[in-house]
Amino acid sequence: MGIDQIKARLRKAAAEAGLPLGDRRKTYNSRLAQELGKWAEEKGRGEEFHRAVFHAYFVDGINIARIGELVSLAKAAGLSEPEARKALELRTHKAAVDADWKKSRQLGVTAVPTFVIDQKGVVGAQPYEVLEHFLEENKIKRK
Image 1 (cartoon, rainbow, N blue to C red):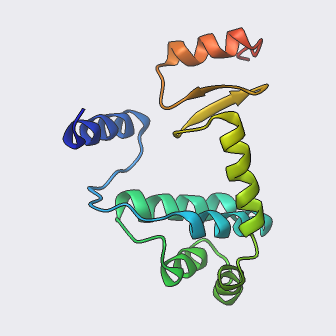
Image 2: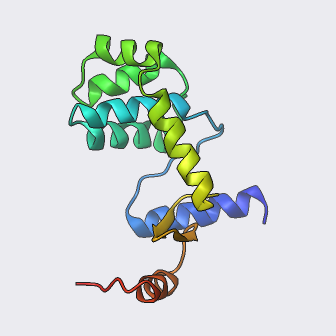
């Protein structure tokens, strides 16, 4: 499958899910965004920060590897710019993200989304039927 086919598939999935998606031309390292996301969660603004980063990256094509961009996104999410910059410069949540990455490797996560129940997983975007079967196999019932 070529890049154009992959982009078309992604665009279709985003449209079906009601998610905005721009025409991003580059891929940027999200490591610092993950670290700042952990910090934002501790401050009670994780959801707002993650939404801001999602939109910046997937819609606007912003380089989320840059500290200045992340600090601006933190401000947009209602967080303190100086505190966000300090968290990034000191890498205060590096160990927490390292632990998340280690756990994901142990669980065999190779793509997003990945769904895990009791150390078993389904990797990548899957049709409803696949997820339903996974839940039924693991005795998780819909309410």
